[in-house]
Image 1 (tube, rainbow, N blue to C red):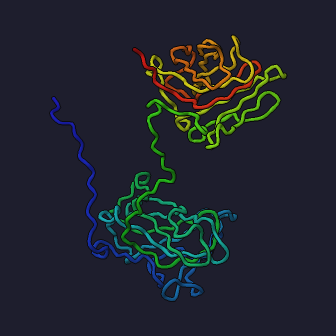
Image 2: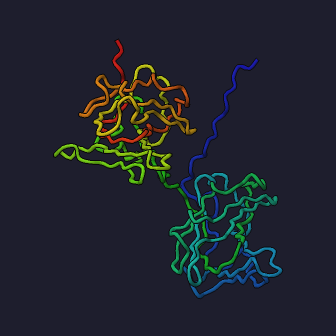
Image 3: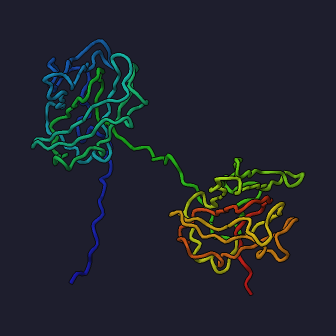
Length: 373
């Protein structure tokens, strides 16, 4: 019988006061101590150079080409601190490898290094020096910091034991030519992550009334204001205050006019669940008919879902007490009249499909609750 099935939380050890009390922080500075790979071979030319230095008088000069004939591996290694076994356990969550880097000439848009920590049993941990670790966006002829957090090293694949580190290897990929200087361990606190895109909070799309078109489409998420041989839809001023309405003229008899429509999302193109609103809500709009109508529908109105299914109602004189109006009048189309031909839980947009030939003004298109006695 299990009496408790909780899991123990992972505890991050507190950061020690001084990194020097845990491990020697200097990996490379001037003298080529505890290093290997400073040689010329088919892959690389590596040396200690006085040509450039960030501090002191020397730096590591590297020229390499992994695509060269007979090149199997390129890189250098630094044992540091006399190749003593180094216990990084307490600093793995708090420290980073920092190095100063510059190009020998021109610019490099990446730094194809694989930093590898190796322990004394042959286990390894890897981290590729991605551009996100650069102080600037590219490597040029000015010294800059490249800072790689120890917490970003992949430790599991080859079972690195961080309590018994032997050396740091810098494996060289692709090709390049750089100077390296001042390689060391530093305390590191990552910058707070700033999202590159923040999703705006949206109001409840079923909190009716929702005005889909007033002077313009809500959130500018409407379409269909076009002019062609079949339809001309445009915005015009309704009064001296600059209030706008939709003026639509259409002729489906003009020829191949299969697409005479307009639509709008009122939830910034996110799906809307209208399933609970169908019995007590309506599509409402103001209309003035200029031409067409009578018993024939002037357009169909309804919704489209994200599977392109449509549920539409033909708007004709049956929705206006005195027939289709020649002056501005308000029309309500109950949602309960819509056929169940789409997924009302994933509504994409309000949809208007013009029929026959006609001309009309439309305004104040909205979704409203019906007052049911």
